[in-house]
Image (tube, rainbow, N blue to C red; front, side, top):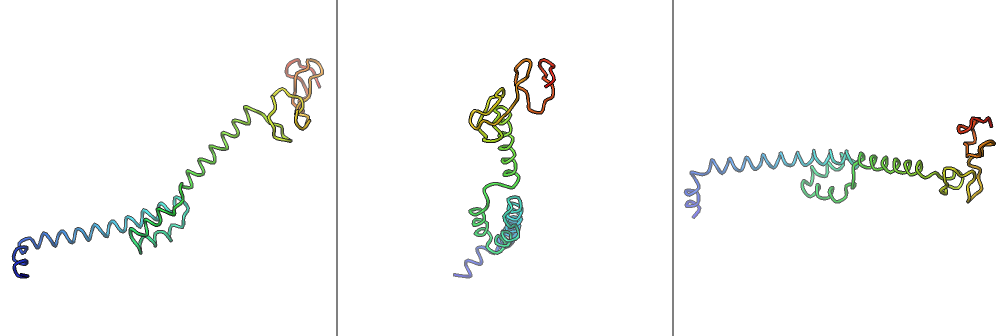
Amino acid sequence: MNDLFGEVFKPYMPAIQLGQRLFLLFFIVFWVALVFWTWRDAQRRGAMPWFWATVALLFNVAGWAIYMVVRPPESREDARERELEIRAREAELTRANPVCPACFKPVDPDFLICPSCMKKLKKECTSCGKPLKLDWAVCPYCKTKQ
């Protein structure tokens, strides 16, 4: 029976051996690429790149799958960009709606004192009565020295 099997596939043996070698080459390239990708991704996310590359090298797809489960959800650049965007929005909101420097409650731009904590926010012009910043020496509205 074994001779019959060998005789049937004997003309195809070079093609079968080529297929086996190509499959082995593909497997090695895939393995190296998986280790490299894991190392690069872990590096971008700040997740011990050498450790995870070693895990992917030793356990191949299983190690890569474990890394995919436990890896940080976002890269360091994405986290930094998100933090900067949050700070920019907070600064924009602060500029649009001023707050009291003492109690951090919202105040109107023309308030002289904070209605919550009574902190002096601005001074009143002696001539025209408009609200002025505390360090201004002259009223920009009526040119009166303070």
